[in-house]
Image (cartoon, rainbow, N blue to C red):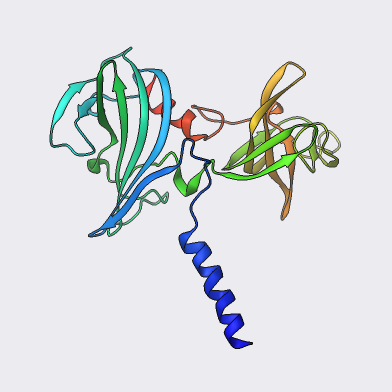
Length: 257
């Protein structure tokens, strides 16, 4: 009996230690990952075509290097260059403290293609002391698939969202989902017109409702209770992309504000 329990515990630990995030060989899939002398290097697949370089990519981040080091420069990007992103590489210094926001110390690189030139640019060099990984905490990995009248691919996404209108919460994504709660179900004047909720997952697919095309969002509508809302009626109070989907973040990093 004790031996069986031990085997179960060891199996569970192995699943946590050795499991890899599920991106189905798409963007986010880990190509290589290594750790040596306190430096962890992770290269992920991240193919995004036809990005126009803009003012969000600072001048000192535009040098193209032969690989993921500063040893040899082979060119430089300029405004309105049209590039393809091929990979994202994070170099994390494990022995250095994280920032007060939890960002690790290290470098963020993109492998890019400019016409016939393939090289690497460093978006966040070591001199900044920290970087933000577009795939931090395996953001946007596939969690599950839900079948209603259509198949929904559910991806991991953690961020906040604001809701200003009455909005149905459903037990599944899509209008097929059963209504389980109503946001803003209050008498006028008794509460703030704004509600903030945490997104824990998002559908890869979008839907068009009342002329609005958006994703379905899994939110925590009450402590410990989760359901789905249509993102077309939700908003964010900041600049940049509405959702912290890695591809959106990469495009924003490199293009025009």
